[in-house]
Image (cartoon, rainbow, N blue to C red; front, top):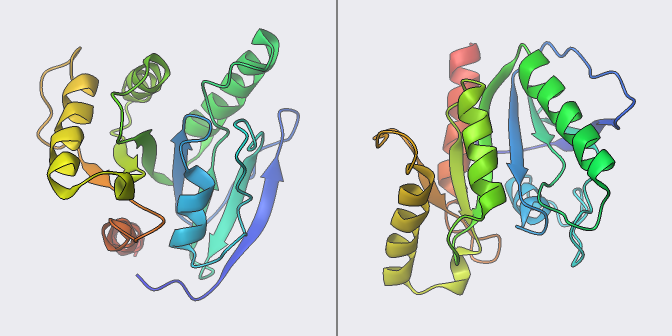
Length: 201
């Protein structure tokens, strides 16, 4: 898939009514500061359409980016950010669940996990929650440029095995090493977006 145009179309906060879109959607979720905004900017070949920050918890809304006027890329709030109240975390959780359960056009959920480390408890909880909601998350293992080639394969296997601990091993669990710096994994993710359009067509 080649992205020719990208624009931030809709922003929804905890009190907003989520839109009912006619076009297909893919959603991105991940722990705060895992590199979600950088990944989105890399996919869209834009430097700052999605705001990046060194401080976690930057994305506090559900952001809908319209791609090529044919697909929505949906950026969900980061999870695992400790410096917000329990009440606010619960409201974010309700908002995310409302989207995941309510969207009629959601094809893929991409979960971002830092490939340098084992999945955190929050990562595992999010993965299990998505599975409970009958999604089959595609794992994007970010910050791949920080590792040597032999470490990438090893750590990708560690990420997969940690997520599979409470269920039978899933041969279809896809873990994609990704880097917004050297573009590792970029074409793989773009190919998956193309598959969404093919299924929709």
